Length: 182
Image (cartoon, rainbow, N blue to C red; front, side, top):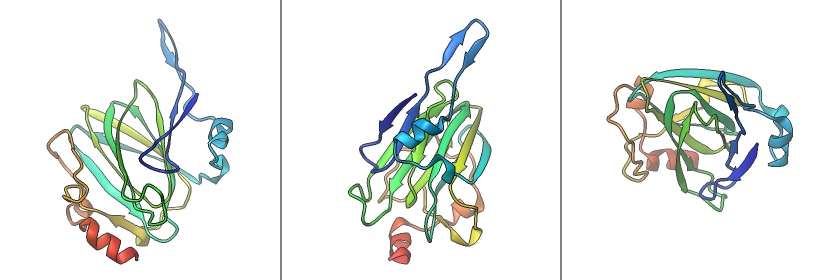
């Protein structure tokens, strides 16, 4: 498994597995505590695993947590998603940096997102399953949503938005979120 730093987001990493394919399909290790530890991340710090299933065009995000934030390890286990991370940590050398990725069940690449970064994705395939490994228990009182179409973010979503949650429809612009977190 290779560890690839994400230059636009300090402390973010891609974990690229080495799949073993044959006539049956493939086998791939998607998490290795030793490899995660080698990137300076405590593998024992993850407390919850979750999964979401989305239909093509569904948009989830941009989300983050207030307070201590929330680090997460995400992976598309089936289908494909257009994934976005924005660094909202004022003390970070990559503050307001943004990076996009295509995560897919074909590659099984995992993306580590540090606490204090906003995250969102859009399903590119008829069905897309995304797995999350999270370092804090979920507290809905700390949920923060940023408007996916905020011009300050200028995220190049690849598809028209087919569906999103009410929370995402009512999300605040980035400027309001930054004002609230100062």
